Image (cartoon, rainbow, N blue to C red; front, side):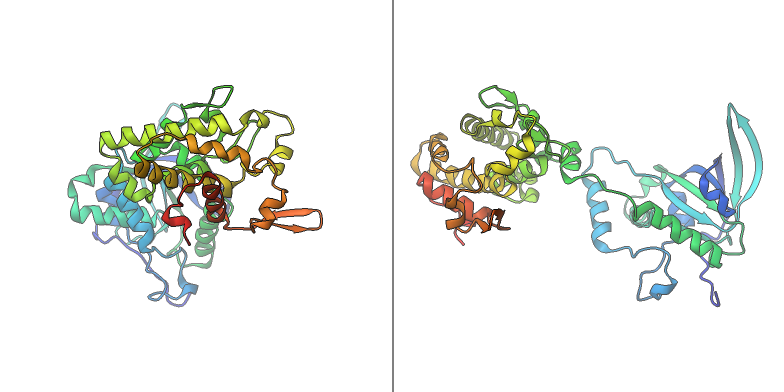
Length: 386
């Protein structure tokens, strides 16, 4: 490369390191690998983040841009989490001076030094490093926090050589291009960091249906439909937030009030129990559950979403009438909810018939919600009056 981009220590001092020597497949490319720990202070002082496209040409870049949305998300995580934890970062360096090796058990530990003028590049962890640099400016007491790191030494003059650049880009691709992210359902179910997520997980302990099954046994917590499953956790989450009538960001503020949280739980619990009395959940307890799901309307994602809007409409009607029961939901059973192919849905522009094939029109959850409200003789909520 004609004009190599060299990244050196902003502190202009050497960085002493204690590392484990590791053995990884990437060493077949002529590099050496180590694992260690850096303090936030060390990371901020000795490493820089690659410039975004616009300052560098795209052909010069070896990483994706650091965008404000990603950094703002990390800042919110740091500010709101009760216990932050960050995955390891990966750093390429052109050279490393190993001063001492010792063996502990079956592991080799080295004392090393990264020279101030050694080229270095953050292959994975630019967002975390940007956050950490921000923290050093506004919250310097966090400097003693640590983050794990993988150090890859290329043994080259710099990291702009063709071999080093190819290895860096391939490593980034290996990390991101072929990785399947967890489902939204699984991520939301495992998250207990916000009042909304805790409420959703508490509701899973409600017993519903004629068999009084726990709701968690009727929800695809990992985003999969299995025997006995009604909907995914993501779909369930959407239904509940629509029932409560606010965006999650607003709900998270409201639910910090313990009394509001308790009332919201009881409201949702009553709604779910009544649905359990009306919807034939035991029909899903069959080995032919996929065939059953295909036939039914009430298990479809748009129908579950519609129920959230219907629930909100009913709550507003309860406030108007002063009758705080879910009895109006009874009329659900008078609709052809167990037959997706019923002409009722086609007539009301929810489904399309193409010969023997019936498909659901995307984005018809509000239409379904309005149809249900008409059947229940309930004034639709604002979201349905469009």
